[in-house]
Image (cartoon, rainbow, N blue to C red; front, side, top):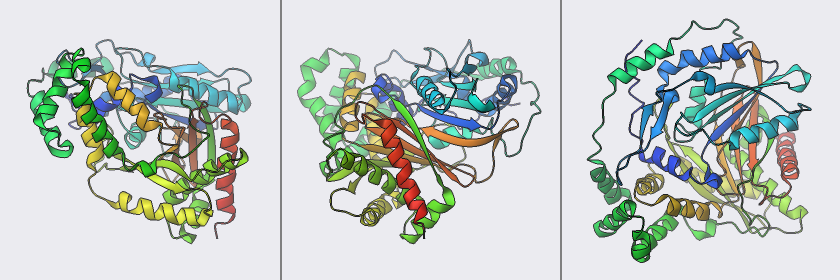
Length: 473
């Protein structure tokens, strides 16, 4: 066993990781992701803990917590939790009576919304007991600063297998591993953090040196916000508005205008083969079909309430991950406008397919990196206020995760569903899909202040998917 962590887990947070951590200060913008795994039978807690323990040496971020710095421009960094205890992170939770599907979804929402304990690594796996019918489930939650959805899936591979497996792995001496890592750790010189920020801002951001200096002083002296808000903060706001894209892409909904910190979880499923056939018949991709179906559902929900938006403001995620590492964030969120009133579903599909194709195929996108570079300079309350403002302009956030095309197991339990939860981030809802065997498993996390009947919206999403499958040819 190596006495140092793998090279792809750097102790200093990247700009993207730091951005995710800072916006998490606002519960409305919580960037954590979760995964509800539905099983055909219960799983033994000790077996699950031993599997996770065996995987930690290759994924050291699971034993690391965030250590803030006192320096205004100092980078956030990861450090090994000196009191790490696996039993705090892999736990057993009983679902409330009657233990049915709705009770499981409500428990998933509760776990997803529960803040991570301060000073501990930001992740948790809850093994669910007392489910009706003798089934099983687990709920895994991970802060976005640790990994994005694709990276999180690779972390989940420590307890997922391709064959039923009841034999526990050998005992892992985590204490010895952590001792070796602590002994090999060195203090990292953060004196060049300001130079790194200058470089980031001079490139994709393009701020003048005087404006960047003003922002740096705001970070050092919060009272300076009041004295210099005019120039520096207006510059930042204008730049982030530009990075967010054309206002033409903003929401036109008259229903989905309110926002809150409340959440309500619904799910849907679609045969992967049916989605592939339906997309091919329309000359597009499965993601084109998925995003279109969600736009169709949003419009149908509005129509039931006597209104029809001119468009649906949506976003999708393009992964920029190139390696096999599990940690970190490698993605670009891209806004897109789905036509609303007076457009047929097939016309909407064509419009979205055309709109998403250039973005999905494009190379580097400076937007996320530029905003991330600013995170170290903008006071957190200002950053989260800007985040809320941008999130409120979006109706539906979408994302997709490619899972295993073959059966998967946790111990000897067959996985019957993998329903991901992505950050709502101030939008009306987040709908994230994950493929598994011949299924697309969709988790829709709704802000009930925006969508006041989330169960009905979930039914409409399922009916829309079913309609595409029925007309796949």
